[in-house]
Image (cartoon, rainbow, N blue to C red; front, side):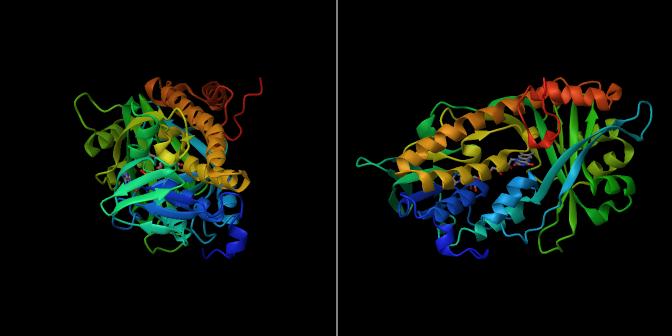
Length: 408
Ligand SMILES: Cc1cc2nc3c(=O)[nH]c(=O)nc-3n(C[C@H](O)[C@H](O)[C@H](O)COP(=O)(O)OP(=O)(O)OC[C@H]3O[C@@H](n4cnc5c(N)ncnc54)[C@H](O)[C@@H]3O)c2cc1C
């Protein structure tokens, strides 16, 4: 594993030790689940459809600092993986009748932004000890007549004590547990982009702000999020990329071209922030329709779902990867403390099924409040943002709203 942890410390030696665990999908959830299995003493095989490195996928991933610390302590992540932590969230909008920014609220919000590729690379490095097959799509999974599960690929059929579906939002594994489940479209989209920080040198004020906080910009009918992430790709640990995500409803009939989000930013964002969006590198993956879904059960032996396969939350919760990482910590604990893999999977289902449902519901509420029924941002101030966040959270918690707990 290479993070200073010996095999004896890593493997739980629990009753699940030696059980055969198959993992469909080798992205964030698949790698994290593989590490969990190895640490609990299982024999792990991962099947990943993609045949290249997954490093270039995705852009920024924000996780809570305590989770980052826990993953480093347990050897899931190398402490040397660069991150770009900040401790506050600043809310801006365009001053009425002007092009300048008006800061209307600032909340404590400690977050650890990561580069997706570096996060995947660190998790993948920690899967040493598992068999990781690239370019090996799984074509079918099913129950074995004598118990356990079967995984079929072009190379044949393999038998496992249990199989983890970490195969993303279109999960083939989930179809065994919930054949009729379909995503619910939110009716709006998110545009994501990045900009190297040296290309934003003339945006002095935004860059100063982003070194201490992540920024939300409200505009009629939506909002944008801006934050710095480590640059990755061999750059120094302190090199940064500016990452953003803009949520809005694309015009009817339009698939959401990059031109639309630039036009929107030009019309509604403070000047320097519109300029950042105008320059962002929009790649093919930068406009996603927003949708959500959650499986009715996170596990039903011999199958278990993790990450987006178990549920997709709207990105406002910044919790898709977080959930996948917590899924892995839960599986490790369940395998270490259960009498057999079936009990471990039932333990996992009891803990993770309600958590996925909670996050999906929270994502819907945040989406309604911040996009579908976005407030008149021009009249918002610190007090109204505090009250509005409390009302939106409605008693539940989110690490993004660290200090906004409902005390009523
Ligand atoms: C705009 C946006 C912002 C986000 N921001 C955050 C954030 O700040 N924080 C956060 O925690 N999350 C965030 N997320 C969510 C996060 O990106 C995802 O939830 C997370 O990456 C999902 O990981 P996964 O491994 O479950 O799925 P995926 O990354 O989709 O991986 C699934 C893998 O399975 C493989 N696969 C699929 N089918 C098969 C098959 N049949 N055989 C073999 N392999 C297969 C695929 O090739 C793929 O590699 C964001 C998402 C969006 C859209």
